[in-house]
Picture 1 (cartoon, helix red, strand yellow):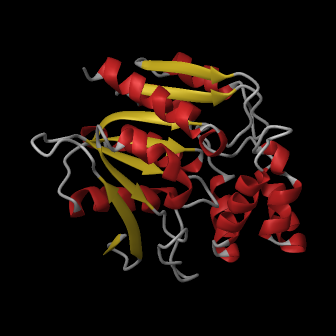
Picture 2 (picture 1 turned 135 degrees about the vertical axis):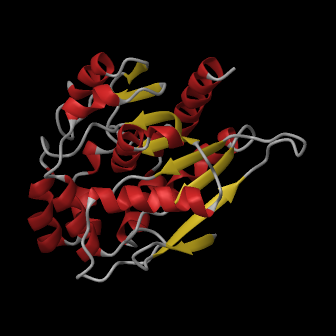
Length: 267
């Protein structure tokens, strides 16, 4: 694990995995986790990707091993994107691919819209253009009453398919999510649940993969098709019957779909 300080003084943690051939100069691939997540949750996709790319996994501010900002530091989507720009600068990377899961994909989308010169492609897994048209605001009182672990356990069917076989994975997922600071999680969800930028995604000019859970229970599932229609250079893959956390319970397929897309678009 490495870290850097952002322009407003918050320590950001990140990991680098690079198993490419030493005589090559690989492109960088940033992996951006979901709300209530961390870079650790993306572990299973890394072996597939790091053989071909210099993989950078970033803990968003307030998540994982990154610092929880003080309550008086404003939390905005612009600041979260700026953290990503500053990490690119810190690592002296001009442009990269960005694989974003759910809220991590919000950052990838915003980067492609507002900083297109830094983006080779974006790969969006269960990531719509914001959280506004969802039940997310109702999560806050439930988290306050029950705690984050219990809330996620009770709503696990939104995230994993019914009958998911490995209970140990679900328990690990619950424990990992619960490591995050609850007060910051609430701030993050409330901020994201007020945002939606479908009208802006047509400005995304880079190659874009949209991976959609076919049985998406969080927000408006039709948004994935609308994004595909609006983003000129996009491809849509639907995971039939899939629940929201596709990168948690089918990471090998997600990684292979990402590699297939990148290989076709960047031969």
